[in-house]
View: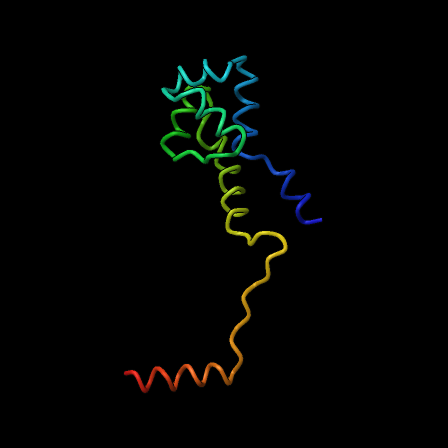
Length: 110
């Protein structure tokens, strides 16, 4: 259920494609306007690469939108990147006895 909420959030690539479409620009035309390559634009739209903030600024300027238009998507993607992958378990803390053994070992070595 939680994952369906996340996928409803706009991604940088999705917004980039939307804004580019609204301006009737091809990937190559946007690349020419922003000083990037068509391959970079394609990677951004597919979510295979995240742009640096200076690149976001160049793209936003070429599209005639503000950087803030992309900011929410960038925050959403950053939060998702920090979230552990589905199916992975959180590492458990060592048992109390193990903690004591580690402390004793450290004291002996010090």
